[in-house]
Structures are given as structure tokens and as C-alpha cells.
Length: 169
Image 1 (tube, rainbow, N blue to C red):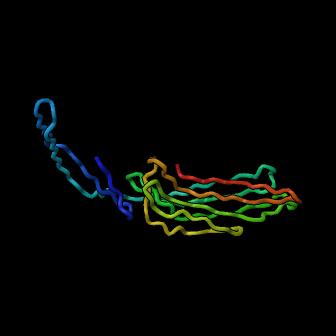
Image 2: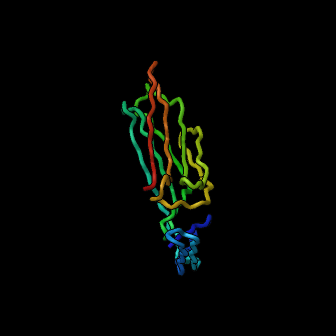
Image 3: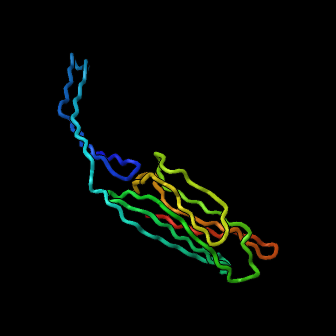
């Protein structure tokens, strides 16, 4: 069974079957080889979607800043996912530490392409709709869907980074 997933998340299923396999040989030398296939293609109507929310949080290594990420996504009955929005924030617990830069990255794709990954500088309390339309089959090679937030922190002359990852699957 071959499943072809369309941009809207609906799936086409193809059943491919070899119905004839003929080899002609002359004194142990193959002269010709012919294979005939039959295929049936039909739309899988059972592609209802459900919405999900996944959240993550963590302190940096000095326990001075806590970061938060929330991703929202849809999952259809065929197991394909679509990242729909990303939001987050950070809370500074030690006010001698400052956040000098915050970078958000998110994506929803696989080795065959999909939606473009996004990297952007953000300020505190951010929220973005992804605008993605291509569902991704999770569990396939190189499939990823999720977000990460990297904070650059400073205390006096010391600087360090804190990375929070929030991925589906």
C-alpha cells in the first residue's frame, strides 16, 4: 500500500500489484524481462483532524531565567501533523542576569521538503501563526515538527546560552 499525502492533509491510497512477470531466456542469457502492474487509487476519506497543544519549560543552568514554549498542531487520522502556531516567553528570576537576545526557530517538514523552517529574533511574550499548509508524516526519515527557543544571557562580563526544545514525537 502506497499513501500519498496532499497539502490539505487528505490522503490518497494506492494499491499496486504485479499481475504478470515474464522473462525470456536463451541459453542462460536473459533476452527480455517484462512486468505488468495493476494499481487502484482511491481517496482516503477518513482524514479527520484533531488539534493538540504541547508545552515545555526549563531554567537555564544558573537557574536565573525560566523559558516557556507552547506549540499548537493538528493531527489527522492518518498520523500526519501540521504545526499551526508557536508562542512563548521567559521570566527572569535573578535580576542581575539579562536576556540580551532571544532566537526562535520552528519548522514542520521532512527530507522530501514541506514547509520552510523559520528563524527569527523575538521579544518577550511572543506568538506566531506558522501559516504552514503541508502536513508531515511523523516517524519517517528526517521528519521534524516543533520549535526551539535560544536565549543569550549575561551577568556582568559572563555570557551563556539556554536552549529550550519543544518537538512533536
